[in-house]
Length: 42
Image (tube, rainbow, N blue to C red):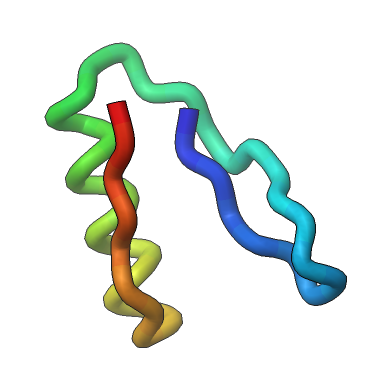
């Protein structure tokens, strides 16, 4: 599951990709849009 942070400090599920590699690609893309760092946890 990929989570994004909300304005009030919480988090929300954005998407649930089939593979870890796909999750990494999506997270990197979203980070490039926002300029925020990516934190990956298994």
